[in-house]
Length: 483
Image (cartoon, rainbow, N blue to C red):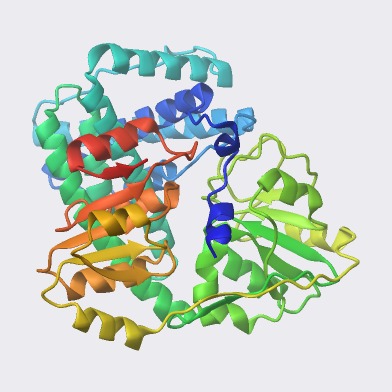
């Protein structure tokens, strides 16, 4: 099982021994966030005047959820996306101006980087602009504030993705969108005090915690109450699609569209959440896990079409593969953009590919989930010092906390079990230990900043996690990294 999680967390920088942010991707992210934070500023100002524009807020949240993982991003798509953000910013500012005029009050405007009218905009000029934004930040703010700003951006992007998933199950309340943009708006001012930023981050962490609770409830209601996970690692003869990314509603949509075809559907470890729910196993063409965790290798060996979901956070720069389809708003150059509502190009590509001409049987992987046993374990540990181990507990942690009772959660990403334990033992002295560190674990960790517990996590090596985020968590929220 440990080998499985090592594969799930496998990144190129782990083998190289060096993990860092790519400056091009950092510049692109700076440009996108700079536009959305300005939209957020005017949304907050409008709220102060008792005006809410749901359309603008939803568009801002959708834009904030965008992740570009590839330096080989589609340049035209990036420019088009930026121009849409510019229009959204102008629309929001004009709406604010109009309301101020109607009420006879003074405008409050941001002074920020902007293009001159008529200036030609290309991907290169946007990247250079992003570099200027980052340089300005580094020259005008102290390091701790920069780290806190990056943590805010990370948390608001995480929340945006979760809100968009929640929209698949129910109508999201306007206030939930607003709280995300309200926090992001703080990053417009370099004069913000670190104490205020820290306090607001903790408050937002509690919102994230509740949002995760809400998502768990809605997933269980829609896909069926969670079960023991039994994952097959078999290959069957026939046409096939390989799905990567954590958007399980997209996987469900694909299974619905292909249930009457002979197309077999496989996923990699990023889609493991789907295996928790019984609904997915109603589809005979849902075949299980494929691959080693090495994206470049897996894509090159897969005999079928490949589907990268909208919020997949993987790099495809070094992938040599023809038929990759994606719903990402800014796709990579080596993939074809499709819409969630029209998967026909993906399905047709799968049917045109040769498919697998052999069968391969592997062992099943099982994660036991026994709610009754979990409840019994919790009852037995009331009024004790508790160490909640997410995954296999290390000897170091055991020895350091020898006087703590250990409650082990087999699956390191099992947020549902973690929430149950924390809610059931609210007054006990608690430590939460994460046996793995990757971007998904950091997303879970940021929901616990306002929870009464101590947190330990193994040292992070993932290239997808900004060192600023890790530093902010360690310096301001006492997260303990274990080397």
